[in-house]
Each structure stands twice: as structure tokens, then as C-alpha cells.
Image 1 (tube, rainbow, N blue to C red):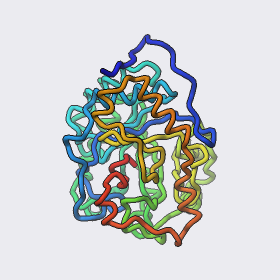
Image 2 (cartoon, one colour):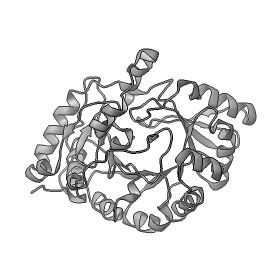
Image 3 (cartoon, rainbow, N blue to C red):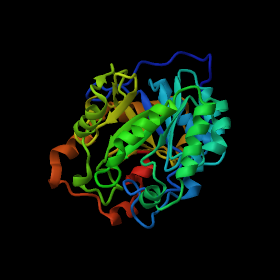
Length: 353
């Protein structure tokens, strides 16, 4: 049986570092590969091969892996999917994570459609903060981009998270030229008025984005130029840790962030690993192979054994996936749809992108 460390237990071990000296500090846990939207930049295909439900780890098994990672220095966990709120009684997992000594923050990224009905339980169980995807303020555009109706539910979810959470809600906007880039300033105004913090994300070339078009990328530089043309200087805010967003402050106090994975990758400071719902641990969003920690493994290994395996995998880490893709440019061969269907672990929505 796996032993879980709880508050008050022994101190954590020294940080494990990879071949470039990057520590393991953040773990993204995908609790499901399924989603209730079909966003064009993430799940553009008509159908997908899903992870078999019988192979998914239950919350106790996921918590055991997180406990092992915490022993190695992980201090922040982010719950992702797919859409994490599709996983039943997710608050129970949050409650288990909250009992782990050394874990400082539990966050979640969601599309917000189910947030209104779950926010009170989630924050009551110990969820610290939430990031909600918000790419447009127009219902018809939302429907076109996601192939679902859901803008009103997303807005209700944002309000519920703001009501029940103690930290400001963060909003993610994936900016695509000719799709929603005309709303860069509108979303900033919406976030400011609601007391939220907006983060612009460059349209990324990842496995699963099978229809990625480089001409639709709106760069960090262009985003900043548009904002500064309207609002004046955007002053950089000192960065804390290895957060992916570069944050800026306007004269009126508005703070926003830009995640420039496409044009200015931050591989050199990346401290994140990703755990899939069936127990595959990836050390990079672009990695093609992961450490298998499925139900049989978790059930048979102690926390110490799990930590040892994760330590060894991270210590060998050489990943600089986004930088490599940028260097290859048009010479990169994208992963084909048949390849993705043969191994759904390659999909961004499976890895918890």
C-alpha cells in the first residue's frame, strides 16, 4: 500500500534537478482527457481516441504520485484536462491534495462551463485559485470556435469563482489572427472591470493542434504594441519563480500577462512535469514518451519508490521542446492524425496542456 505524507510529517528532501539544473517545482495533473468543448486550437478533429476509463487512476492513486513528487520539491499542483470539471466529485481530490505536507498551492485550469455549480465545494475543499479560458466575448464567435454554445455558462463560472475564491480569477485568451485578435483590448477591459487578471497566450504549435497555421500567430510583441498604443507604457512586473507568463502593469494599475511559448520560449526555466489521468508522467509538453505510473505500479510501490523513479526520470531530463520547434520552423514534420490516434498520449488535451 502507498503511504501518503500528511501535514506534520517529516521534512521534504532536497530538490531534484535535471541536466540543465532546472528543479521540479510544478506538476500539472490531467484528471481526464475528455472535454465538453472542441476548441479549434486544441481539439479540431471530429472524433478522438480516448483513454480507456478502466485504466484511469482513482484519486487516491493520483494523490500518491503527487505525494512522491512533493517529496522531490514540487510545491504547486495544477489540475487540468481535457476539462477537469468533467471528473466526478473533483473536490474530493482537492481535499486529499490539501492534506499533503509541503504542497503550497492547488490551482486549476478550466473552460468554466461547469464552474458555477462546483465552485463552492472546490474552494471549500482547499482549491487556491482558478484560471478560466476566455477567448471571446461574442456568443456567435464562441460557438464557431468551440462548436458548442457556452459563453453564458463560462461567464457564470467566472463570477462563481470570483465569489467563492480568495484569489483573483485569471483568464486565458489564446490569440489567433483573423479569429479573435480584434478583441485583445476588449478582453483586457473585461478583465480589469471584473477584477481579474488576463493572460494572452500565443497560438501554439503543439501535437493535437493539427490545423495550426503560423500566419495566425499574434506575437507577444504585437500584443504589447496594440495595448500600449491605447493605454500607454506597459511596465514589466518582476517575475516570481518560473511562471510561464511575463506580467506587465499599466499606468492605471491594470496587470496582465503574456505567454509567448511560440516566439520566445521559456524552456530554460521550465520546472513543470505533466501527469496524465492514466498515470503517464511527461517532463515536457512536447515529449513523446512518458514514465508509466499506471494503477498496477502505484498500487505496488511505496511513496519512496515512486519518488525514486520520478527523481531518476527528471534527473535525465534534457527537454527543450518549444525551443527545438522554433529552431526547426517550417522544416518540422507535424504529428499526423493517424499517429495521434495510435497514441492519444501525444495529444495536448491528454497531457494537460
